[in-house]
Structure formats: structure tokens, C-alpha cells
Image 1 (spheres, rainbow, N blue to C red):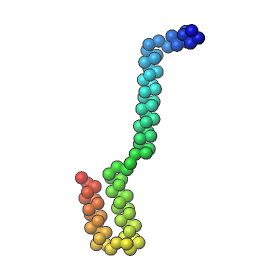
Image 2: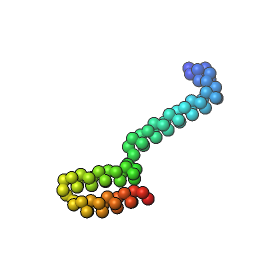
Image 3: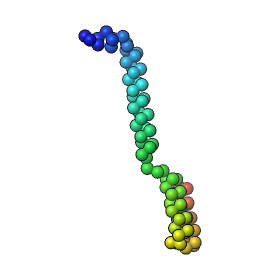
Image 4: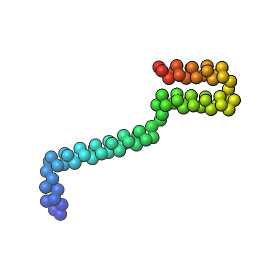
Length: 80
């Protein structure tokens, strides 16, 4: 009965509130971690691909007509 009097002072409402607090806290932590390690969304991926195309054009790996064709395909697929 060492903790009996101490735990009894919280009451039912206190236990419910404490449970809600911890459930909310853990939910927020899990949500933050999922956002931190989430894969890029579709729009972000399109921007990354366009940036890669820009670099390939600047390095001379692709010609301007191929660049325009690929960029048009990427941007049109990103709108859907």
C-alpha cells in the first residue's frame, strides 16, 4: 500500500486526462516522425526531375529539343 494513497488522489477524471495527454503526445511524436522521414510528394518529385533535366541540359548531355519534350511530359504529368 505504498502508492495506494498517492494514486487514489488523482481520481477518475485525472486518470482519463493523463491517458488523453499521453495518447495525444505519442500521436504527435509519431506524426512528426512520419513527416520527417516521408517520401517526397508528387509535386516535389516533378520539381526534382525538372531540376535534373536543367542540369543535364547545362552539361550538354541532352539537346534543347529533347529537353523541351521531356520537360513538357514532366509538367503535364505533374498536373494530373
